[in-house]
Image 1 (cartoon, rainbow, N blue to C red):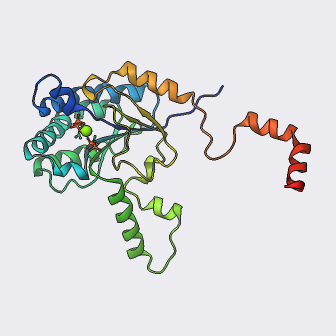
Image 2 (image 1 turned 180 degrees about the vertical axis):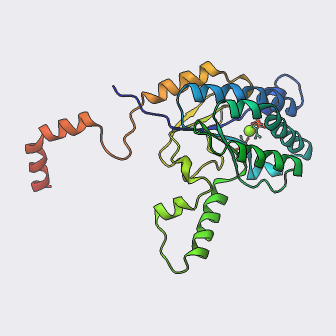
Image 3 (image 1 turned 120 degrees about the horizontal axis):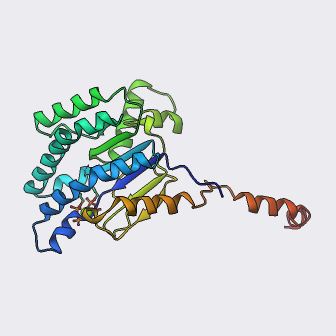
Length: 251
Ligand code: IPE
Ligand code: IPE
Ligand code: MG
């Protein structure tokens, strides 16, 4: 059986708060512990041969959280940029942030654009942090930009796609959510139209490279039909040509 290529993997890194609360710690402690997992998973995605890895780091809805929590998440982003910069560059990773970063501190914005520029010509894994990101927001902005640039022209799927934030990432092949909830929470709505979904009970701070690898292995064996029927059903349908004809005639 041929395996599916998982070119674009997207992860909803959820469960940090509950991980900390279940240990009688403040929720933010879960974010701190969760941030330690990120580089392992990036390395593993690279080792598995993924072309793109998109991590949900902060949603448009997360703005409603308490300021302390938002502040810790901002600080963790800055820390990642400072600590992981070298590793990103050494490993030929192309780093980008997609979403609205306007409310981030100036120094963090500078670190983002510095790493984006420094890694722009890298040809390895496309690593994207979705920050201040919402799937609906992305689609609405893409549509408005298209209308502004092409007044009166009818929009098509291909055209809309080209107006998304990072069209080069392509469709999501696998979307994983940790933390036990089974929803998409406004992540990559357009790009995940045919994504394979995998929900694990494991909370993000406990997520390991080996669980990640196992998920990828099991999903790469799933049959993806994209609305078609599988090759064996197609063969069996052909062998029943006479029956098919009779049904069509008499139906
Ligand atoms: C995910 O963990 C991280 C962010 C949303 C930034 P949560 O903070 O949502 O953790 P739970 O879901 O409350 O456990
Ligand atoms: C999704 O998790 C956002 C991120 C992981 C960044 P949430 O915890 O915010 O999602 P809901 O509120 O449970 O849907
Ligand atoms: Mg959550």
